[in-house]
Structure formats: C-alpha cells, structure tokens
Image (tube, rainbow, N blue to C red; front, side, top):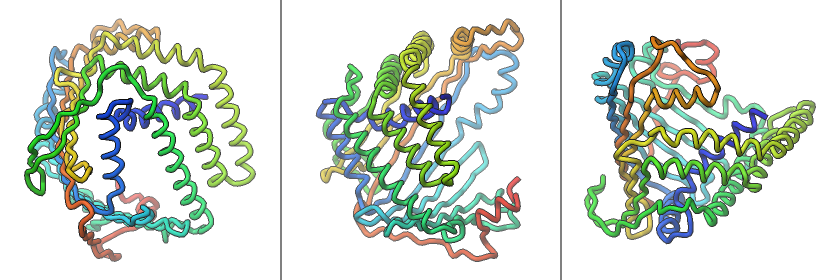
Amino acid sequence: MKSLKKLVTLAISMTMVSSIFTGCSYEGKSLSDAFTKTQKATSSEFKTQIGLRFNAENLSAEEQQEIGKAIPMINASKLTMNGKMNQSNNGKSGKMQADMAVQVGNMPINMGLWIDTNTANDKVDFKEILKMPDAQSSKMNGKQYIVLDSSNINENGAVGADLAKTSQDMQKKLSELTIKSMASFDPKFKLITDEGTQYWNLADGARNVHVYEIKLNDKNFKDLIKYTSNSIVNSKETKDFLKDYLTTVTKVSADKGQAATTQAEIDKSFSDFEKGLPQFTTNMNKVLNAFDGVTLVGDKGIVIDYAVDSNGYIVGEKGNIDLVFDSPKFMSVVQDLSNTKNNNAANKLTGIYKLGIDFNTSIFNINKNVEIKFPEINSQNSIRYEDLISQNKIK
C-alpha cells in the first residue's frame, strides 16, 4: 500500500510537468505542439546556463553559523551545459554528447557525457561514457572515464529484447495517456500567455520568435498542485497505466516462481488503494490545504518563456524559479499534521530561506548535420562501471 502511494505521488509529479501545457486554450495547444515537434527533431545542439541566488533572513545563532559561510558559495555557483544530439527518424537509435561545467564558489568542476543507444530489432544496445572531474579521476588511479556498455552486462539477449519492447510499449501508452489527460486538463486559471513576437538573442544569432509564457505565483502554484493531485489520484486511466506498468515489468524481470507472488501483491495493493481512495483523497487535501498560509513561491514567482521559431520548433527557453522555505511556519504545519510539537526552543528553526534559479537555454542547428565524436577508450584511461562497483574505487 505504501509503495503504491509512492507511485501515485510520482505519477502526479510526472504528469504535472507535461500537463501545464494543456487545457482547452489555443496557447496551450500551440506550445504543446511545439514541444512535440521539437522532440521529434533528428538533430540539434543546445546551450544551457543556470545561476543561483540565495539569501536567508531572521537566522538563529546556530543557523547563522551553519549557513553563513555557504551563502556566498551558493550565490557564486553556475552551471553551463553544451550538448549535441542526433537520432534516427523512428527514434530507435541516437547519440548524445554533453559537456558540463559547474562553478561552485572558486572551485570549477568539469564533466563530459556521451551516450549511444540502439533499440532496433527489439534489442537493447547502448554505451555510456562519463568523463569524471579531475579530483575524482585521481581516486581512480588517474583514469578519466567510466564506461557502461550493454555488451558487458546484457548476458541474456532474450531479456534484453523483452525490456526493449516493454520500454517502447510503455512509452507509447504514457504518451497516449498524456494526450488524453491534456484534452480535459483545466486548473481554472490562465496558465499560458501568448506574448507575441519578440526579438531574442540566441546562441546562433538574434532573430524574431513567437513567445509563450508560463507564469505562476504562490497561490496559482498551490492551486495547480491541488488540481493536478486530485485529477491524477482519481483518474481510472492513470491507475490502469500504473498497474499495467508494474504487471509488465514483473513479467519481464521476475523469475516465474516470484512473478505470481509479486502479481498477487500488485493486485492486492491496487484493490486496497481503491477501497481507501476516499480517505486517501481527504487526507491528501488536508495536507495540501494546510500549507495555504505558508509561502512556497517568492515574489518573482515561477516564470518560463518559450521561444518558437517560424518552423514551429522551440529554440529558446529562459526564466526564473523563486522558492521560499519559511522554516518556522513550515515546521509548525508539519508538526500539526503529525500531531507532534517540539518545545525545545534551542532547536527551533527561525530562518526564512529564499532560493532563486535563473536559467537560459538555446536550441539550434535543428535537423542539420550535427556530428558527435566519442573519446577513444582503452584500459589505460577508462574503467568499466561494473568493475568500478566491484572494486569500490570511489570512496
């Protein structure tokens, strides 16, 4: 029962991300179409920059001692990611490369990632190469790369084929479920605004784009969570998908002796959840409503602007996410919900923490010749993932 509730919670989170481009509005349909088209592009490059803003108020002496030194380091943190991807028209094979540079205070951390996948002919073939930061490489006897290769770990081809087919079938069903949910999704407030044509500076040059903006303040954010949560937990289609997913994975991954027992547990969990759904919904809404008086989203709100080019592809994304953790109010609600009170004033949190995330992404060279080069791997500069685990190289 607890595992099923965790799955429902996960489904809520996943579906909310996809469903914010929904409702019956023209803007929602237009932005959703742009996302779908962009995902089907056979090649592209991207550049992303993320920065953090952090401050704290009303800190106790203990909090000041713990967080005071971290504030300048967090504010100086930046992430830059440059990447490329190309894939076949049917999406069954593809490659990706990404270079990540993280600046934490005065300490730079550089990493690289290469992925090559192929699920044609119902087989799972993949290779992933991760270039470790210099500091971590020194702990692996100077080896720079960790390699995860299906040819080394997939000893049972039949299982691999089953997993490939299962993955494709589940992706198709999830896509169908999302599209169906989008048609009826209506949080009762305007979520997406058509901002018209704007002149944007992008990685491949400045030009006119059509901009759609998603904007949430604290109240809208809470209303969206409440609406989405109730929609998902009471959706027969979502519960059927989750049960189908668990059943299918059990058939593929569990041995025959264990499969029957696991399936019985799945059936009982869903039956118990269905019987307890009214009480579960009541308790869920009690928790969600309890945070009405606690600020979770800051003054700048959650703002995401999407730029769509004349061909209907998303070529830019920028915005900010402002979050607030008002520890006295938040912990008071948590204690009320759990019927526990901490009367020890010395351990009482007083701080109000504010985190801002600013981001900017450009997508370019869509459907153009994007070449991805993999590093040369040998026994001197790399270690297999399975060997790394067995040898416990990383401490």
